[in-house]
Image (cartoon, rainbow, N blue to C red; front, side):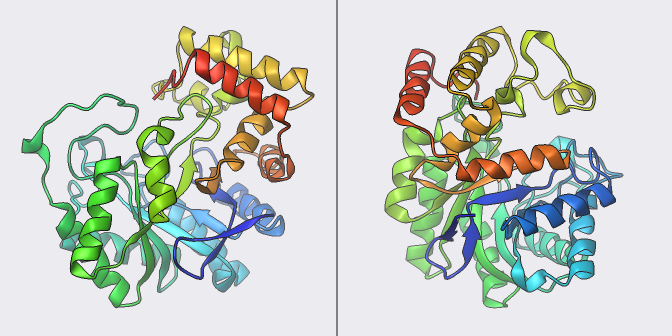
Length: 345
């Protein structure tokens, strides 16, 4: 396993992070604990979760993922060997069951953290992240930006000040953002400089062969400001494995169970995925491992967040860390991307 430093801290995180949003919906507690055991044995010390999980969000399952992880930490006694990340939810009608409609103000953030600490059975979080912005902007599959300042809601300054107090109290070691834009990222950084508050150290955004929009505005910020990318959806909901080609819907797969997650679906996407699959097979690679290995190779990447529903899939995904891609494969990927860039947001 490769390791990197989280921002300007001394926290060492594995280049591969275990994403857990299937825990409590697609995976039982026993299966979830087996995944955690395997990942830890393979050198993964970074676990990412969220108060909203599992996916899809429902009142009756909300928080179950953190509970499963907390039980594993208590059973295994590995809390001091794990870098634990979780997130506070932003606003949205579809998660009105969380605190009556979550907001990114001081009261909601504190309540969210306290609830997460109880479920995770710990007294601190290593990396606490804002899951998505309070304001209306382009995230979760929206590439275009529509200006609606009337929906801005809680200012970023209030959110950051609330996070700063949690760091001061020792309940949070470091902070980060997720599903954020270049403007929002710089607002967090500038406000931290202006007020002497903790600076964000990471940004968790989608990044994969079908969506490399992070490169357009955020990659330079990531380099110059030392805010590393925690890449999520590196397999584009599993689409880049090729298992959905030709209209296939494998039993138990995410898009089979939850077809409304259509961000990486459509005929135009399938054509591009077919080209990536053919490129991988030409070079004797598994399509999923090629897609993950490409993400692993990006210089602005801090961590690649992988997820799985079975141990075989998890092991294969972790193996991608030991698969450097040849120049010929990289050139093939770049050629496909240049002909049809960012076909899915």
